[in-house]
Amino acid sequence: MNIHAKPDWIGTPRRYHDEQNEVIAIDFSLENNDNRYRLIIRTSGTGVQYECKQYGVKPGSQKPYPIDIPFTNEMMPLVEAILQDPYVKACL
Image 1 (cartoon, rainbow, N blue to C red):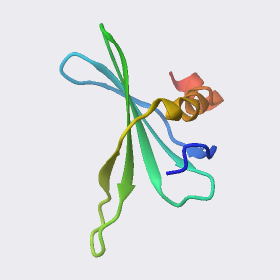
Image 2: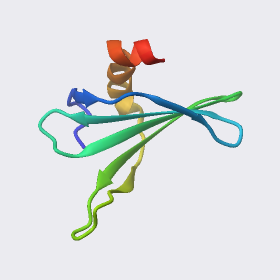
Image 3: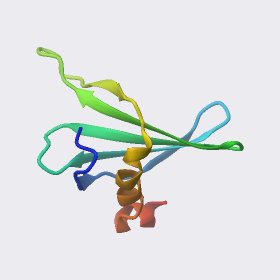
Image 4: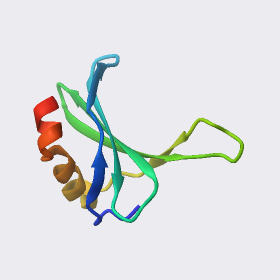
């Protein structure tokens, strides 16, 4: 994953709740990259936590499976670019 690439496609943000957190999941892809990714934002009383997953495909399988990508502070410009997208802002 090239964290300096711009988002090429951003899907509709989806909101849901787990145990005590509000969760927003946003699917996206990056320029010059055929992989799909998901940004997961968990909001709780103690703050905001970000996760990023890549979706891989197993040969012979129709369903993609998630691969955890360790989140680093260097990924924040990518997160900001996704959150500043006009479509994402309108949905949130």
